[in-house]
Length: 175
Image (cartoon, rainbow, N blue to C red; front, side, top):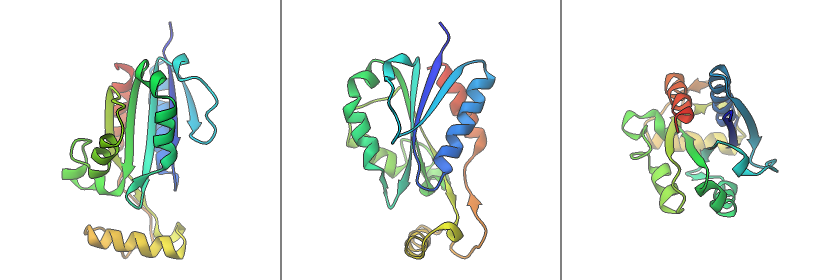
């Protein structure tokens, strides 16, 4: 049976979607089928997939509550399907916070759920102050200042390590 990988994402500014599309490319280049879904549009059954991946971004210290709701709603299917999860956040730009077992948002997320996917990872995101609303720009700059991140840039800064995304994609296929 051909493996079909379902990938569900929750993205605020588009970086999680960009990462998902890169994962899709790697998986399809390996000869497997993928289906990509926005969390707001998922109408399928998880059990039809050989592997089901959830990617979720952080905004103001939290994953979108729809991610937790989705997991709780589909918990039985997730537990009976090979599954993977990745988080996208700016804290992961720091080497000491770039692994799921050291990233505070991933730790907090899995402390709040009983779901245990077979594969977990975290990727650094992207900051683009020019694209944010005034309030978001000020709040994100404050957070970045508190975490010693860049605050004075008019250019987007992408912190995502695309080699890690590729490695994660390869691990998905062996899950």
